[in-house]
Image 1 (tube, rainbow, N blue to C red):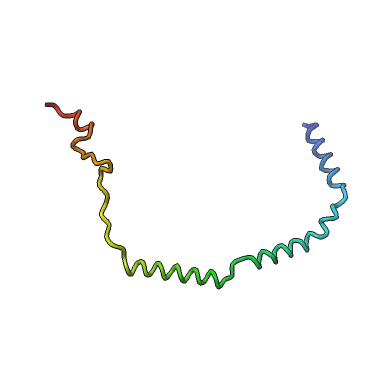
Image 2 (cartoon, rainbow, N blue to C red):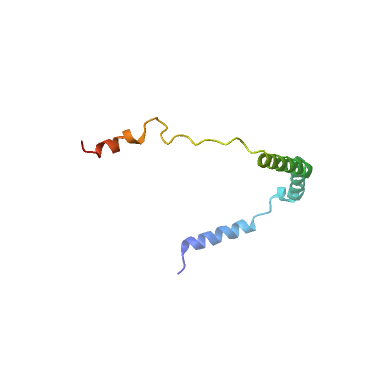
Length: 95
């Protein structure tokens, strides 16, 4: 089971392995560290997250202490047709 396609892939991988290393890779460590430092500077601080958490808890507690006014459910017939006049009920009755 010697597949010619696999031999071609093996030859390509061997050629890629033997290529010289890209010189840009030497500076990749510094670029990664600089990128991480920028990301840390732009992230939201822990203090801001704590403030948002406390405000959210305060609003939640206030909402449970002072409940909203009771709400009445909407009519079952939003278009105004009562069930007694629906076509399905009218067709089923005999005069």
